[in-house]
Image (cartoon, rainbow, N blue to C red):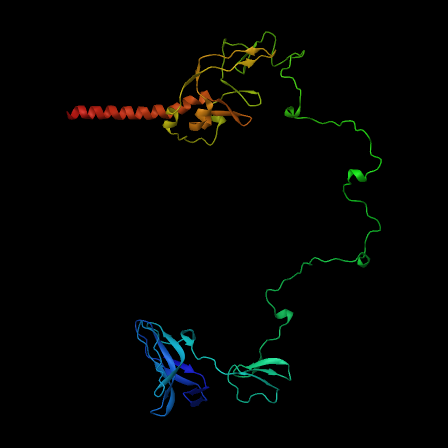
Length: 374
């Protein structure tokens, strides 16, 4: 394996050397582990010589250090060579140049007075061309290459105009008159304003009205269709019961739901009314956490404004307490908790019963096993 050293001039400890041709140096065969070699320019006063040399490193070791003495051998580092494991050739990427730049290589000349034997990278200002140029090893080249619009890459295809203004007289095709756009005037700037304003159609929120009555006696009215002759209507704890109280006759009967808007609908359970059916996983502990309560209903105002005493000693659940464990059976009205879907409470009890059934059967089987063992 080899590396090449370009021509050059050097002074080592007062001794000058000039290389006029490319010199080739041999790099020792690579081993199974990587190493670092060093190319140096060696001054040896004893042999009165200045020559190129290669300092071979050890596998996995540091870069060899040059010898630099005051009166004996003095080595000037030129480059570090990375010798990879089991390689057979040195690439340019493996060469790390170390030759430090010293001196002034910048000059000034004309085409006629340019240096005749320039070194690579020699830089100067050419008075004739008024450009900076350097020696690229073969010819003088401009330091800054000329650039044309067509040679640029990544240039935009269009240029949006920046913020600017035009004088009105410079515009062409401008209109001779301009209808006013939508705008406003301060009331004080308007002349001929009326002294009074009849109210327009508008509305008020109930909370903004003052001195409003607390009760409203019903005015004369009638019902048809929904309530027929002979139908009864009774009010109990905020629930309206239309038609008869008892089920009689033949036919199909449904549990009735009342929507939030007051509409009635029947409670259907057939699969033909359902889709996306899947198992509902529920923790039986949520049902067991519910607490039956005994409570008294608050008094309510009848339509005529008289107080209606609430029922006493009712048994049931408190919706706010149920919401902590089974929020899916809680009803909301106007964003607040209002009631419970008691019809779904039986569904919630099924996992509890099924879980207890499994445990009872497991205990019975265990008891039988212990009895047989005894």
